[in-house]
Image (cartoon, rainbow, N blue to C red; front, side, top):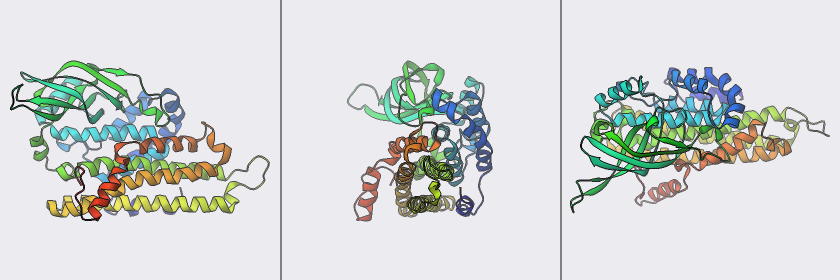
Length: 400
């Protein structure tokens, strides 16, 4: 990474980063050393998963009231970006676990204490999905849950699964209504179905997670009143999509940086049959210059717009002010995911035949960036929602 690019990390966060950013930097050698093993085994080494947890990187958004670090979104995004530049799968697992840790804010303190007692320690390692692929049947004292969720990233290292379920509230009469509720399930209460044979982010272990007729106490089901009781701005109801998907953008931006770093290493070497290294060739220089510009522009847009939302929330801004600031942040996040692919693609092609070998980090960044873009945060529908707002129309999408 060029010195001016590295310096931009701190310059874009002038208030000072949370200590978790330095913790991520310290783990980079271990993450890089494990990257080949992660790719081959389609999961993280248990020792590395433990290190991520000890460093606070698996539960960045766990509320302070639950014993968590409650990291601000700029620091959290930076930490994930640093990990992703070293290995996309490690960063993806940490980002998914941390986003699901945010959901602990929807539980009461007694429930969190009971979870800690049940698992033998505070909840810090998560998997989950906000797509309602489960059903929750109301019974006395709670719900009976069944379902099968795909894309259960980090499930091989998680203690808890946060799954969205459809529940029929109020009984079976005409006054009943369907609601979507998030429930916390011990991973041990379900079955992990090995489905993760994919193009990229292979080490995330994003298999299916299934449960059948598992009882979940009522206090382990998300409730808006608990979220409203949180005092930190991280849990403001309007900020959820910004702060959580900022981590997804962090993965994409880190993968783009990792691709540029990997290409820089490749470009300093000569090519068989040619004396001139890649870096001495004008077309390659043009490609790298454009890639650096795209990455820095996307990164600054993302960080500055997320920072504006965060600073406003910290200052106690009303909903009207947040309504003005959130759309640019939502656009910046989806833009970052798309621009990461536009950074990686020309580098992959500029590397020629060397780029196609699985042993080269650029090849892995290429695949990982394309798979990361398939996440809901990268959907082109977000550009459409932002465009509708820019044209004076309703967004027709949640939390814009």
